[in-house]
Amino acid sequence: MKIGIPKEMANSEYRVGMTHLGVRKLVEAGHEAFVCSGAGIYSGINDQQYRDAGAVILESSAEVYVNSDLIVKVKPPINEEFEWIRKEQIIFSYILPERNRDLCHHFIQKEITAFGYEAVEDQRGDKPLLAPMSEIAGRMAIMVASNFLQTTFGGKGLMVGCMSGIAPVEVVILGAGIAAQGAAFVAAGLGCNVTVLNRGINRLKVLEQRLGRRAVYLTLSNENLTKFIGIADILINTIDQMGEKDAHLISREMLRDMKKGSVIVDVACDKQGTIETSKPTTHEVPVYVIDDIIHCAIPNLPGAVPQTATLALAEATLPYILKLANQGYKKSVLNDMGLRKGLCFYEGRLLHMRASENFGLDYNTFESCSLQRKE
Image (cartoon, rainbow, N blue to C red; front, side):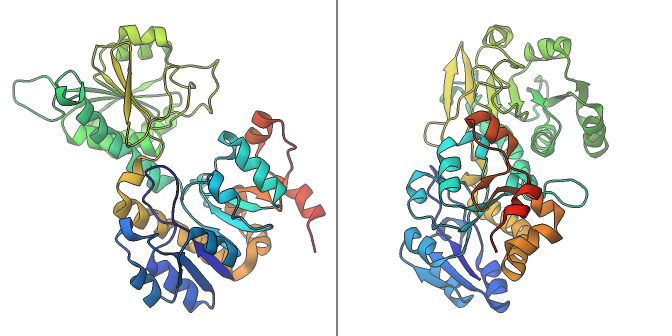
């Protein structure tokens, strides 16, 4: 199979879909790899390293798309890339179709088969391709918030860290998944008072087993939310309500209960969902202020640490890439139920319920697609 690794084109995205080590594995298995020149430079991988691994270096991402059967990348393709995608191509990346109407229409029109990293599951039901980036995003959220607490960046002038005789910074985390765990570990390690609020008790128990008494673990009730919003210096949200605007956990009115100069980091980047006042920001313009509360909602926090993030992601995705290349996508989804969970487009048919509901598109099951699949 011909596998392509284009250069990421999303705003401030410096990761790359595969390392030279992964390329070598593909080439050794008898496949061809095409890499856009400069694709790995921010991840610490130059063109020569890819060449030495057996890749063909092409001058543009457009050429990579033209020459490849399977495209491996990090972020969902953006508008410019839609023109380069070939009919019946396979895309393996984060897809998030429920947030992108244009992507859905182009993938349907071009009969694309696409697997979303965010939905692939392992045998335990965990999400191995989402977990490493979620953990990095959670850890970075505390680091980002600590910057914006500084007066230099418009914050209230607090330092995140232990100082004898000084009250610690109060960190409140919504959710108890992988991103929340990452945030809790860093915040606790820096000596903050950490409170984790989550709807279900099971994840709280898991986090408590790992972190111990360095945090407080509570159910996400209205009473607890109201109480701890009022004391938070840093509020980290990791709950994604898929933009359900009628289901805000934190309304604009509730911001009045927060201390002025406090920082909200919305790791989920759930626009006007969990937090009514949340909207996506960028690494170039990372924050905005509403009612004296600093908001940060950068969708690709791990993109700022590409050498770390690329290695973590590439290690997780490589077994699946090899499976797709060696077996083809049709056999792969039959043999691997967890990979099938990540299948959001099958030969142009939409298999994602939320995207179907959001954009009024026909929804298909894998079983119905299998009955209609092309020979």
